[in-house]
Length: 320
Ligand code: ADP
Ligand code: MG
Image (cartoon, rainbow, N blue to C red):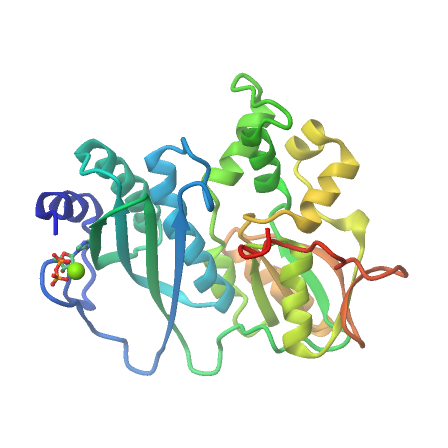
């Protein structure tokens, strides 16, 4: 394909890893999986106007395309290593590609991820990123391990990205001079994958998922996979001051329950392991808030209340 564009991407994302025996430039990359490790792999696609608003800066798009994938590895407790980037571009604009690659590289450097290959084609703006990471055998944090009595936690804060999207959509007009508005836009455009927290949760969490479709939907997936229910303490949901300030408490809570794109980790821990979990997170500068309990039954409820996962929980691309 467009070799000069590929060269620009390669230059901007260059990162030496001993396990990359052959990177960008040949027919396929050749990679050495460390002995005794299992490979965790994931892929996610970002389409302009669907997964990020028209007008999002190329740096933010490049960042987010990698971030949503690293979030999937984080949710498995995997250590990220390599990425592939399939890039579809409406035009061969070198400055635009430089910015995309720079945004991608910024986050890749932070986590030591090498871009080892990809594909570049012409069409409507779209990025597919595949990531590969390592996890010790038997230690992946899957969705199916939650047990009755486990405590439910979530990292960071919820609803901020959905709040940012509302500002972009003009329901409350975006004011670039407003610090809270800018903070919510950043939550939407530059999600922080909880990579180190995910790795620190190995051996502590019974089940884990990243919150990409909204807390109700994603905790609902954990419940379904584990054959359990969950009850949430709605007063305990971590809401950022910016979200509460701009939308008020009631709407902020609604966004935290049903809004997507936060890329926090939601996980369950046996009561006896809660202390050790907090200590392990503190070692990597992580933090999690207790938001509920795993119960018998199925579905997600408010404490003492009716099922929360009603008609609308999370985003379904085919039934928006
Ligand atoms: P092929 O025809 O063998 O698929 P390409 O011209 O598609 O070769 O790609 C040439 C090299 O550049 C390959 O090593 C490929 O992995 C890499 N590459 C292509 N596009 C990208 C991209 N967007 N990001 C990273 N590497 C890329
Ligand atoms: Mg190709």
